[in-house]
Amino acid sequence: MGHAFESTDEIEVPASVEDVWTAIATGPGIDSWYMGRSEVANGQVKMAFGGYQPTSEITASQPGSHFAYDSGKAPDGRFIAYEFLVEGRERGSTVLRMVTSGFLPGDDWADEFEAMTLGGALFRRTLVEYLTHFPGRTARPITVFGPMISDWDEAWKKLDAAIAEKLPDAVEFHRNAHTLALRTDKGMYRFMRGFFGPFIAAHNIFEGDESEQDWQSFLDTTLGEQK
Image 1 (cartoon, rainbow, N blue to C red):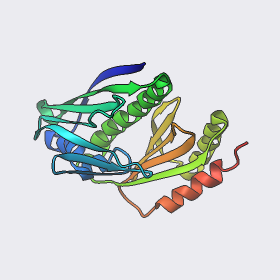
Image 2: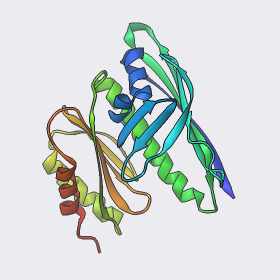
Image 3: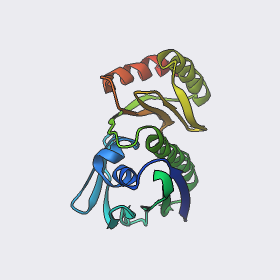
Image 4: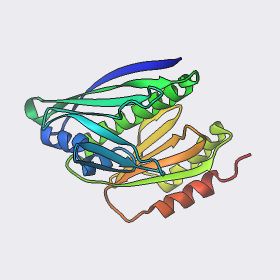
């Protein structure tokens, strides 16, 4: 048993076609709203975060209008594909249509699908935020895996209290059962429930010298005492 899926999202952003294309089809652009490091070259999209290094093959690349890539099918049928369609509008805005499709194998696909759906909503919302508030700029990605969590309700409460002190002027732009995202003038800060139990911080920093070590310490201090 398994589950085939497809979802489509359409957004309009106050950014140029060129800025949207850079965001979805170049390594530095993807770094500025996704997680980890990305490279787009030689017909492939390569990503790296937390020891995970997925490589996808580019299946369409028409600059300024159409970009697509997919993971290819694994022996068990697993795959995921992304497609982006870009259309310029009047007054410098751009419409971006995003299609995500794939297949999750096994009888336990539901939990993975839920995590993928909630995480995907976070990244799509971050892309909107990036193209609205930071178009044309390049971020430095920070990705940190924090403690394993046994009580997620308690962990989110601790995080909310700590974030209020650490980023007092931050604007919350997204929240769901598994994720939280905030924005300051210097960057975008995302926190998420890892599928196998750890708390994950995945930030995009445009200014300043904060490091992965800083955020590792923050997560460990804030969330380290789990029952």
